[in-house]
Length: 221
Image (cartoon, rainbow, N blue to C red; front, side, top):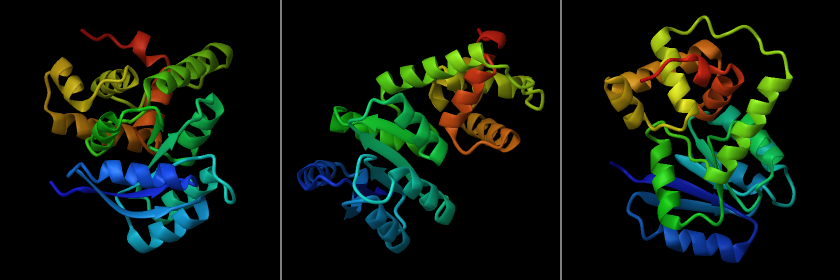
């Protein structure tokens, strides 16, 4: 399997260079460029077309969230993962809405970060545990406090089961084992779910499942 090409974006030069050096120890990752701000990230993405942008959100100049939206508009196949010190629920939700596929805190061990980035290309969502808990709490609260739209009647029963397990944080392999189907079949169901619900990624699918209370309403073994 070819290495994941990565663009590292952070305004702190020492951190950025240190991260690049750490990632260079992993054959699964190939850092192809660096940028010090969101505007520089846009230029680098257009030039390099990396597989993944690893980006901080607290940087001077152009908003990182605006940059994410621009990257996803111009290069929808380029994945964006936030790497930040911010544990703000608002930052997490804004990043997801902008199109980021992951949100990882900077206190994550580099080995775990690499594992999470690899998982992203298997259809998993790299989100630090503390942030996943905040995201789930927020949308559970919204589900209680707000009138929810009609249920996802357009999904098949199997798709509802897959979506419920995604919301629980299960990987594709774990979903396949629990439902006694292949990983390829899980991926096919996920593509169908995203298409039917007009969602961009796995994180948004998990949020949708929580809003629709699919975890409690779907019967799983």
